[in-house]
Amino acid sequence: MTLRVSYCDPSSAPEPWLEALRRHLPGACIEAWTDGAEPADYGVAWSPPQAFIDQQPQLKALFNVGAGVDKLMRLRLQPQLRVIRLDDAGMGVQMAEYVCHAVIGHFREFSAYAEQAATGVWLRRPARPRALSAVGVLGLGVLGTRVAQALRQFDYPVHGWSRTGRDVQGIRCFTGSAQLPAFLAASHALVCLLPLTPDTCGILGRANLTQLPKGAYLVNVARGDLVVEDDLLTLLDSGHLAGATLDVFRNEPLPGMHALWRHPKIRVTPHISAQTLRDESIAQIAGKIRALERGEPVAGIVDPQRGY
Ligand code: NDP
Ligand code: OXD
Image (cartoon, rainbow, N blue to C red; front, top):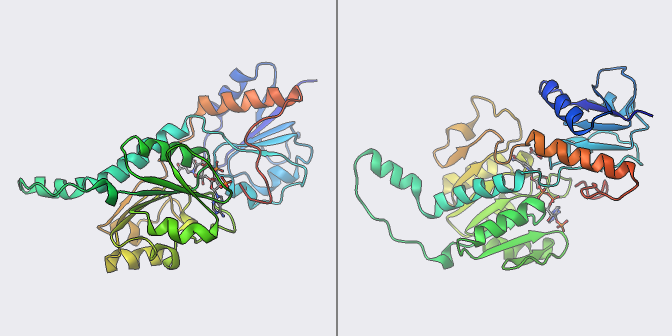
């Protein structure tokens, strides 16, 4: 019987994705999902409507065209449905370069040098000791681990925080809420790579951000809802935080009049720290569909209880 795959991403044109799926799964019937369409064996989707799930109760698996599954977790999913996330698929190296750029830019004071250069000021600022350049990475999963290892290449003291105990070479690992205060107190720069779940929503609010050392820097590349935006603005204005690089926001696109666009200590990018690469992603998804059809296990299956 012909394998049927249904693709759905209401935010982008389907043709290039359908073409990639057809190339990687020759012989399969690949179609863009429409309301009332014939149900498929596998779903490939980013932020689909509830009807996509409801009308295909027999899906063997649903592939998320991204690493973060928070949008899928908000839908009512059949209990037996396997949701499978992208496993790096070219995102890790992008995330590593983005975060290293932001952290190094802060520690080496490139914004201050740019301001000096704009008025022709030749002034050497004191070098920052490595001991005052510790980086904490919230989340030691696929992307957090890659980022932590990249930062270690610059000899920064790097530590990471996760829900369960992790062992990453060269990285001091902290675990669970009991160890969060010690982790935060040791972080001159804080990088957020946690998934958005009921446990992590709003985790970067006043209570936790004030535990960072004075003058700390925040990089959020995970999800906007992890940050309490008003608390962040208050702590930047009070000087407790030196600045922030934000790639993700509670409302995307970030509304034109939003205070985060205009704050002098904030750098905003439009959710591009690690973009989904079509060919790498579809190659990975097609490989997993073939493995599942052979009855083999695949990596990246989401645990609905954890929410990631
Ligand atoms: P993973 O699922 O591989 O890793 C998640 C990490 O967070 C794990 O180490 C996990 O702990 C930890 N974690 C989860 N919940 C908690 C908690 N309550 N307390 C402490 N630690 C917790 O995710 P990825 O590394 O692949 O991606 C991280 C996020 O990055 C995605 O969920 C997505 O939102 C975001 N993202 C953003 C992109 C962008 O362009 N801005 C692109 C891609 C992803 P444990 O190891 O114990 O399970
Ligand atoms: C993802 C994203 O989760 O693009 O992959 O944000």
